[in-house]
Length: 420
Image (tube, rainbow, N blue to C red):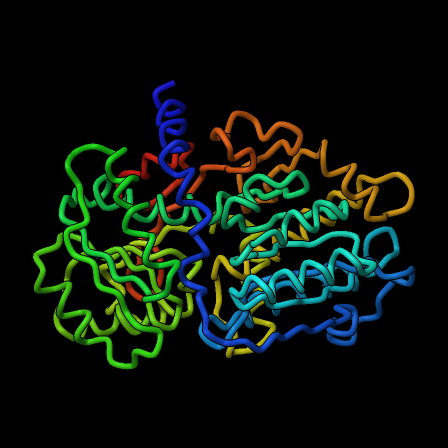
């Protein structure tokens, strides 16, 4: 009961701020849209496919851009689809995955949604809509099931055809910051934030989360980092000289890596917090000892065969694909959900039948997430956020990898895992 009460109080605090959580790490100034379509069956390393029926077209919408490149998301989605197709597809139908980048731009994101809604797509899978100015609702109006999406703002948290299995932006931010007082016992917290409008609202949200935790933990130093920054040493120095006890990182992936490296170069040993939505296992490995003081929140369970399958697919895609990021795990899980739902359908697999089946589907987690009943979402809800699942996993970087035993799934976004 106490945890549920905390979740309800958190809902009141977050209600005004969630629309501004445009993944904080995906803001971008680019205006060039990229969209590609690929038949995954053609990428099955020459293995003959028994999937000879008409293709089942699905779309992944994400903010792939120069500032936040997501080749790993493309590789994971195409790789899993290729494996499914090589094994006969879904009831003899191959999956065909298309990608559309909204580049954190509301207009471009809406164009992606319009393409998905007006085309012959049966669902979207594992989308990350970081600039949702009606895009989710547009697809909901078209009766398009949005499966396994990374929820990011008010639109995607509440739309009637959105079926996430992770908490998305709220749990990522909340899980990241609550680790400071709960695990690190830090009361003076610094925060480095990408200097974009979305980032400017984060201190208020984080301060509200900390206030809910109690114990006197506060943001005492904030540094905004321009997107054009190439030298991160001044920002590292600002944090190290500010007397903070932990540093919360809210930067895009490549910027986050550079900041961690700059802190280490100046001999910093202050614990740092980051999310695996903006850092990958490859990044941690490349950082080596520089990441030894880094704690990470992640939406996905990194133990078990499903996660190993995900990593194996990324490795097969090539050495330049970063491994293990949440941004790639999301479309991987989305396709897994689509496969399970489509397999459960008696009769033609259409947009209408997929949506109808999704509304009563029970996802067992597939080894990557907790179980979710799509009909009720159990009791894991906040007022106004019927699609919020407040689970987060926690890990600690060490020796070029992560210590999985450091974390565990938690039911409350207001309480971090212990024993780190």
